[in-house]
Length: 194
Image (cartoon, rainbow, N blue to C red; front, side, top):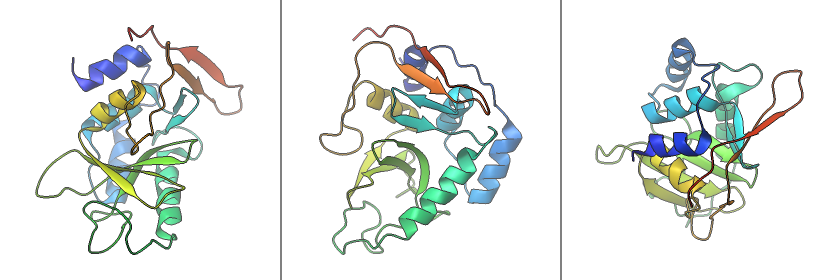
């Protein structure tokens, strides 16, 4: 089964409530780069959403702060950090971590455990390079795969934000959404065969 299909099977039928190609075009123009298609498909299908009480996905067309604000605030926060000289950041060995734009990392999502997933610039023309970090640590970990593959493996309990970072919760996934001015809405995805 393809990574996107595995995620759909765990999260349930997407509602695509904010799907808007123009919002993606504006965001990509602002960023100066194209975001991965599978990432946009998953965000369009479900976001804004919190999965299993931890993983947050934002959408560029949703009311409120949205994806553009999340990205800008995260880039600003990470740019202000004083990095150790020996920080582990694959692809940025000579410069140390860079954030934003074509040559820096672009934040895709985060968790309430302080973890972040970044789209990293391509190295040697290879697609699908993600860097993750725990906001309390200095090191970044590289995953050469699509966002859909990363998310599928994250949701099934693999170590996807560095060693010993698994966050597996048995049973169906819990999804939460906070509609503007309304109470939060919770629902469960389909049963998972694990």
